[in-house]
Every structure is written in C-alpha cells, then in structure tokens.
Image (cartoon, rainbow, N blue to C red):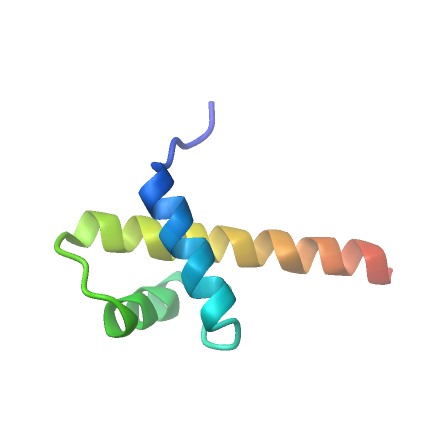
Length: 70
C-alpha cells in the first residue's frame, strides 16, 4: 500500500511548486527549508509532509523527462 496524503498537503504542495518551480529540487532537507520560509505551518508533521510530496512530484517529473528524452 502507498502513502495516504490529505488534500491539504497535495493542494499546498502543488500550489507552491507551480508558484516557485525553481526553488525546489530532489533533496528533501532543502525542500523542507524552502517550505518553512515560504509558508507558516503550525506543525512539523504537516511541513514535512508537504516537503516530502514536493520531493516526490519532482522525482516523478524528472523520471518522465528522462523517459521522453531517452
């Protein structure tokens, strides 16, 4: 079974990724700091979930680009 993410986490991560596509990369720790700077999240758990989902989305995007380019 996969991970279950709430719609809040998904919606926020997609919005941040669309607004600031150049700030994020495949490194979770870097993404965590960027999320912390860009929005105020009350809990560490939600912040980490958002950063983790952004990392996940970027890895998928790079994988798709590699398949289409190669």
